[in-house]
Amino acid sequence: MSRKIFGKISDNLSGGQPVQGLRVMAWDEDWPGGDDYMGRGYTDQQGKFSIRYAEGLWDAGLSSGRPDIYITLEIKNARDKWVHLGKSQVFGDHDLSQDLQVDMQVSLEPAEQKATRFTAAENGFHFRNSFQVKPQILNLELEEKGMGFCGGMCAGALQRFKHNLSPPGDLVSPAQGTPLFNELAQLQVRSMFPSVLGKMYQFQSAPDQVDQFRKTSIGELTRTEWPALKTALNSEKPTILVLIRASGTFDNPTKNHQVLATGYTYQPTTKDLLIDTYDPNKPDQPQTLSMNLGLPEGRLWMHDSAKTTTRGFFVSPVGETISE
Image (tube, rainbow, N blue to C red):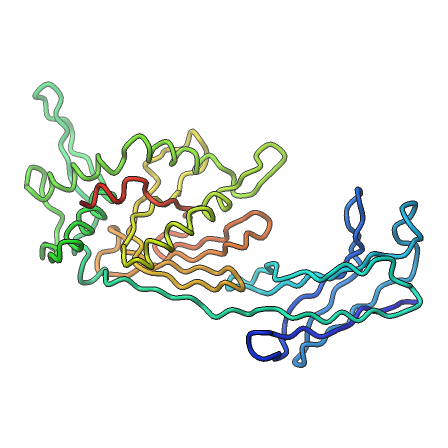
């Protein structure tokens, strides 16, 4: 024989409209051995679900053998991953001769959006983040090398934006020794203060997913940065982000990158976040960072429209000072 757990899920923000397509998981609450999985179902167009479970001995040795049943709700995010939405009360010592009805209401909140006045086409530099540099040591010129000043370009563009100044019309990166080159080089040095480097190593050494030795993932670290970024953007402040592309303490930190966040779209229900950015590597082309802050399996599921290997980000701790 089998019994069932059934019910209806509705949205209390839309006057009780049914919610379709949720995954409903049934559990028997156990301690200390961990909760027992009982089955799953999905809500239909009427928001209804039904889960069959086998009749048997539950909570063996701990109680009467009756299950302490609760359900959890999950919703698919933009990356087609299931993220937690809600949990019911626990129905303790449920009589196995009876079916169980569990109705729930959830809050499907509307998306939040914010765009600052900064746009890549109007306020960003029109040349690419690529500079030719001839280092000098003891008056000896060494071989010319290519370098990037991503932090300097973000800070330089932000300085001009704050003072209502347009960026120069140059389509080619400035040559070494020119005033603009010197400005961006100096800002680049300031953007890499020790506080930034320390945080960069902390983030790049964090794993993509927690394990028995490392309990904090880069996704969890990145999630803690979102409130400060959201507050800044809501206050009309474009904000410099350090993107983590290196992996491991001993990986090359120059793989990491800096961009300027200019707006966002956030879905509170699914925890999907899309950040609009100015990326010095992509002049005049607005870019995006998309991720999910629900952290399924401790991961971030992050996608960078400019480079798909980005693992996480943090708000530059010197972003305010270098843009003055």
